[in-house]
Image (cartoon, rainbow, N blue to C red):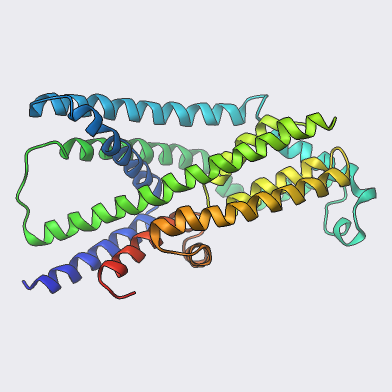
Length: 333
């Protein structure tokens, strides 16, 4: 089979696999596997360089893979525990936001007041009505959550096994298998560049937000409720480009209304300034890594959301980075 035909077949199979990942709801497994694979792949050379012999290197990678999987599961459990606990309850945050909106109705513009529910009870009634209309979906939520966790665990194990395979004996692959392995390598590389860059950006954004909420405002005599929850939410939501910032910013501005509209305006101004800086940082860190501008990522997220919903939004940056790199290497763009 000619080389070009092999490449075309591998591209088609890679595109089909990425489509099926979203269509069959396997994105959590894919992302978990890529995360473990990349973490082990990046840290394993530090151990391998000090070891001699194939078995010693394999033992080191097995230990490291188990450590990464355990740390990932523990981190996810601690995050979920924080948001479910009294100190970081998202339910408490939602209740507080509802109370703030109700208490601030007198100081808000008429056009904004008209778009808000009449009271906390109004919000509760809307939630109850939504639950009644989507009762079937709510009943299956627990089952789906358990299935997602199972997919994540399986993805973590697969990622660890693939990382272990990297230190195995060299294997001769046939042309199509080699081409598919190259597609997988490029997808993993796109994941590493996007996710690790986004973690850096989210961490920087969280530091600035924490300085504002936990240092600057208290120095001015302003103490907002649920500050720790908002800081944690800023980091977690910030892992999702663009949209995550909108979610965390909305929460901070609404909670700032608990003190006064002036503080809410100040919070909004601060967040706008921070995210203007973050916009250039995003373009420098993420854009430089995948040769793409912020509007390209936003457009990709919009299209993927329309096609696949929230999973499409999560997958869009990685998928687009992979596609862009394939096109660049093929000298098509």
